[in-house]
Length: 477
Image (cartoon, rainbow, N blue to C red):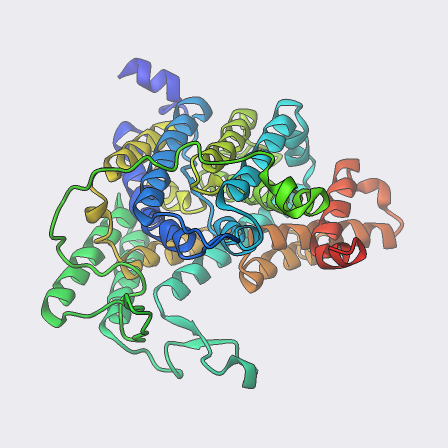
């Protein structure tokens, strides 16, 4: 135990083995949905040749890569940042890349962008960018992520939904269906939110984990009594009163054998042959920038919540963290699981006490177990996991008090960073808007020297990122 303590620095970070185990469990149960959701996204989209990925095989590689890379982050990075297939990134791969190239070529693009990011880490560039960001902007990233994951929680649970007549109304989202909360699953979410909020307010140890488990049990009772179907049935029919992803039924079987058939099914040169060099380069650039800054946002947000950042907002040993995260992108593409990245849901584990890589060892071990007991993972519905995201969003939001709101040079970029994360459903977009506005405002006020040279470079890259459509049109793509 002493060797374990010394290696992970458990006592030095004010934690305990019990807290790390509890935090690792909370992180897993909050993000276990990816084992189901990633296969749904990737297997639903045929590639340009009409070929689709196997749902069972994607399930296997999703759990496998998450397990291996989360363990690696814990053992090498020594921080509680769990890793899995990145949401948003997998959508780009499925619906943008695969629509114009084969699946092996699309996964090859992911591998290439991961290799490039790994090189940027090894050269020290990625860390230099991390260190060049002003402290107030880092704090705004944490706050923005808090709003973002709270919004994700409300949307995933069906508490907040898209307006069914969005084209003819100024209200893009609203409460439930037609301004009303409907269905037992929504009640389960409300129960879970209140339960978790009470536990956290009373500072109950393991409050986040207790909330997830307790709400799952309640969901199973509700399901046993009322037999509620999924929100989207096998035939594509929708039911607004149904469960948003997993139906909390007792599974017919507890075990399922993994299928590793997708491992190594990628092509590094396929995209260049199938869509041309310029198009392939733009695809790599888009994925790389999103991956690069999603991770940065997660590290800042979760690290800040855990009290792991120093007085300048820097994370000690961040080089190890960035290296493992970049390798995860390569591993995700090589396994056809899409790019893997650090997960903001790690904040749930941090809120429950996780401070070291030992929590990741617990989370990674559970992902290994999920390879064989995927039916059990499917018991936890969105409505039971989402309350944790909302409460953790509140905890991250409390850092807003540290931003100097009377200094408009930094306050306006901070504001744009905060609001654009939830409004555009993207951490990267919020960070990009903050960087560009910070540089432009400083330039307009004659204070261009206040901006770190690397931030000028990144701001310029983000201008290209946001204007990628104009770039493609200019190049005739």
